[in-house]
Image 1 (cartoon, rainbow, N blue to C red):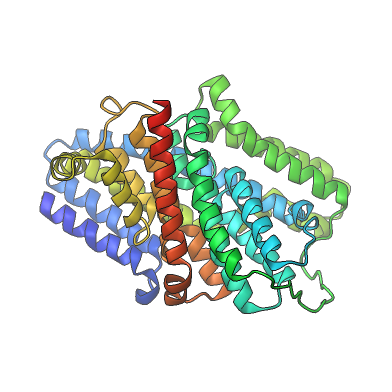
Image 2 (cartoon, one colour):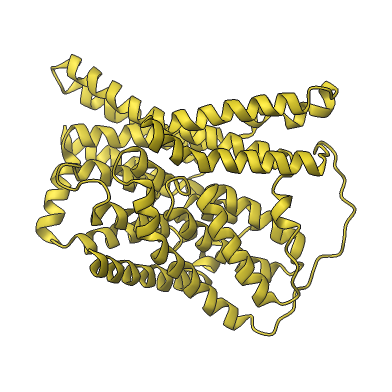
Length: 429
């Protein structure tokens, strides 16, 4: 049974990694993998009550992450529908390409810490299309945006799906992860930024020729509506960790509560408008706009990994790694590099099943280092993170162009951050 399950998991995993050449959506592969693994486990176990109990347990953990993601994605969609992000983008004024690069890098870094790396990447690349005319320049900027978004997402519990999973699972706490990983994440972004800006030294920003924007279906909003929804949306996301600390309730409850408040404010704000005028601004529309295939992918992959946890395959793998490699820092570095090739969500889900909280308590070296490595290692290849895949689609970036031009930058940033984290950990622990 165990060998069959490992083979099924590896095939499903390969199908997820090779999503583009196979032309099969990774969500389909994840769901088929989860279905097959639970079926094999159920058929080969006599105790059906136990399997049912374990499935319920796994579903509870999965649902918490899924509800949280749905809430966060909907909030961001609502802010975007109100053109709320123009509060930031309208303030960017510079003629030097290197100044713009540093500005974009830092905005992306801090924005992805509050929103999430996928949303921030989509937002910043859309902004670059308004600011830069040259496609070659935009490609370099897209690469830096991917690195900065993943680095920014790694040091807060709401910035990256993997950090969110560790936070919800109780492996890390809000303040500890922010203090522990901030410097490493910053180094991860600054090193590639410094190298790229050296190449772009002395170049001027060439803005695209102004086009008359046709609003079409995009609703026109007043500055008050833009500012209100931007502050409300951002405020809701920032308040989730505070809500968890005060109430000790799981984060999904905080995000759903915040979503309800935002929904009510939106309804009252547009109550006097005609139905046609407010249709594109409603939360109902935002719920339709969120990327449901990503949500389904998380459900599939988390349920698939859960079977490996319940059959003790992951625990045995952890024991083997500890015997063979022995050093936690080397093991986590390898996991981070592996997340460049395969999705970091299943890698972190697997790691959470491999190591127990009794052996490695919350905020221990392993979990903090894991949040950094899995969050930023995905930048090394364009398929390694959701941000990279989004950039690939938006700017038509080729896999090999990224591997040649951006991967070496991401790699030196990754190891620079690792060195910074280990030095910092040894100094303060």
